[in-house]
Length: 409
Ligand code: ATP
Ligand code: MG
Image (cartoon, rainbow, N blue to C red; front, side, top):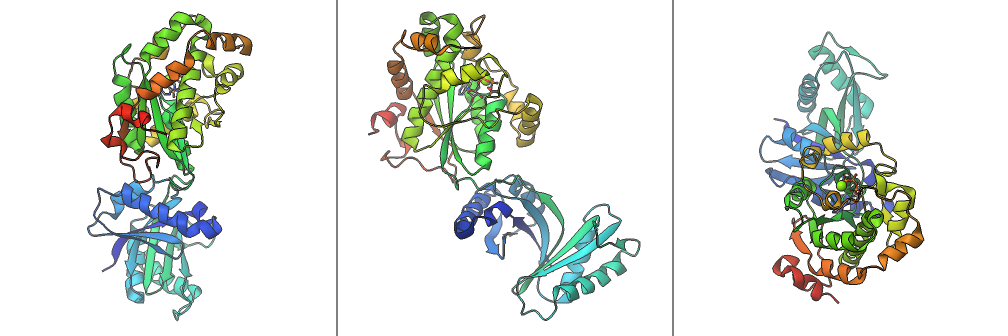
């Protein structure tokens, strides 16, 4: 009897020339990790596809999970048979039956081995005849059919499928280096983080909690968000620092000062982690701190590149994506935020650099950055793609939070 398998398609990975095998292996590891709760028999490479086989009937549920793995362009629910025409023709009937509603169909056969006596055209005709008999009221249509039955001959096996759904695309996480992402419990930054992960980056989210000036709700929300994509996380208790800034700096520039501090701490963590960029969820003009002048006034506090994947996105688009990736409901739970607690009545929307530099010197920013770094708490979500920095001799989880940074260098 034909076994149910998942055939994973991955076009972008295929474009990487000599690195292809490397990319494929990362993708296979990530698929395995994503399917930890399933009884997977094997994840292997077959002629331009990744094949996932199961010990139990789990392919349908697993396909839904595989589609969310970055680097996956498409997942097809296929039947695996031998080269016996009776077997693969019967599988084609089953595959088309479960396709859903359709009026027209077409068979598309492909051989990756030419040692099979039938050509693709022969197979098309052979399978087509069987399907015409099984579905007498449906018509064969060469151009733009409703359903396509794929028959793939690979070595001693044949894979047959009609149901195929799009994956998230992009590149496998772990194929593009590491970034530090500034993750609040809001709607935007989880989406920004996901976008970088989809381009293959390993994300180390950093969250600034308002504790002790606010409760720790946002910390739990951020952890829930991270569980949606699993990564290492660091968090700072920045509430007191924000209070200090709000006492010493001109009120209209407070938000810019907080953000310069956040960026600076993130830059230091990036250095320790070996991350090459910072990522934020900023979108041009969305709030007062996201005007061009203010972005510049914050950005110049750091040397590392700062990526803002949502800079040109509309809130509605961001919300749609947040719903799709499952972070929206978490992000809309209320969490007290220090930024709002110490929000000035009239924040500067067009900051002048001279005034920003003057305010920056009004408090000991270096000491504050250092203090926040030392207070960092670290949570390892045990992602298969995250590697703790080499400079840290022991695993983070075995260290007291302070030790992590004191041991460094
Ligand atoms: P979000 O919905 O992501 O919270 P926002 O529209 O509320 O964004 P801001 O509060 O101005 O915008 O924050 C802009 C960006 O700064 C966020 O997208 C995030 O990257 C970062 N950020 C803001 N607050 C925090 C925080 N408490 N911890 C870590 N990063 C933060
Ligand atoms: Mg926010």
